[in-house]
Length: 483
Image 1 (tube, rainbow, N blue to C red):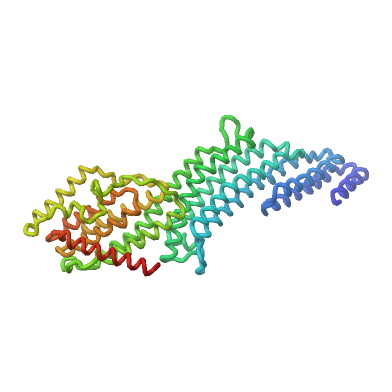
Image 2 (cartoon, one colour):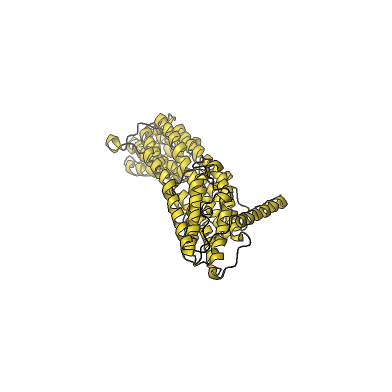
């Protein structure tokens, strides 16, 4: 109604004031500009494409009405420039809101004020859906705009295609930046996401990093290929960049970004969990006076704490990562380390009367085993439960070995470590994929202890077996009582 009144007023003014064209053109441009400014603010409020198209149709019809009585204004060209701003803002706003949705899904892991945390698998499922379905839905909205037959959109079709491709490239780049921000290594970044420091905060934060690792892999392997198909079928043929600059959306570059990010997150998760356990192991080795250690009577409780930490990690990775395959698995028939009787360090039956000879035989056994098995200790971490847990256990055992090298042991202290390490062989076998490497590293801990021992005489096999059986029976009874 207001535009119709404006059109009638223009007709009247031109009759009464023949020299008023310049002022009328300025008024017409201001009127259309204000409409587009309002439209630009409107599209930032997360509107659907139908609403945007409805607004553009109204503005365009107004422009055509004014053009009929004021051709000198050339408002259609003026409107075209203003419409570019509105449509570009709509594209950017759509991607921005999608990024907020994805971040919101991820931050469900980090709850403050003591609220219950979402399980990792639920968060991962919500996040993968937000990324994949959200990206495809946004592209579907843009395609609805391209299907519009009104004059102003048709004239901007090729530009819209370019904006969508550029927006998509920028969207995935910003998403990677957001992932890196969420995985910030400082406590300040944890607090920024509303999570208090401490054990619970560390656990939730590590869980978030693990989810980011798997989500990055999902984006590289699933999201980018599907989005690329949609771009090729509905958003090809843009005009801004030209043939020399190449396409605005480069899926190969985005895939490389998320492949690299995913590997970083996976290593970061392993390192975070390893550091927590290494603190426990360090405390175990620095607390007692090993030179005055008494004869071992049972497996030390640090073994239980170590296994509890590993159990929590196993539960965590099972929520997020797929199962892999076990390798270097050995059976009892060819020398399994599962049995306490198969330990080559004891089978040597080192003489108690000759300390130097005992030390020499330990080292010889260790070197012979090294050259015979050619065990590959550290492999690339893969996106599987077994690979992550195995890598983490390997790092912890290497820490254990280094802590042993910093101490001096008497015979009883050495035998205590022997008992603890021997017991660990049994539960570790069930959670790792590379038994040979784990068995080798456990032996290295004993050898490192022997090297730092004043009298490295191992326990007799019957005594060692008795202590191991007693601990197994006690553990089984505790499990029965708890269930």
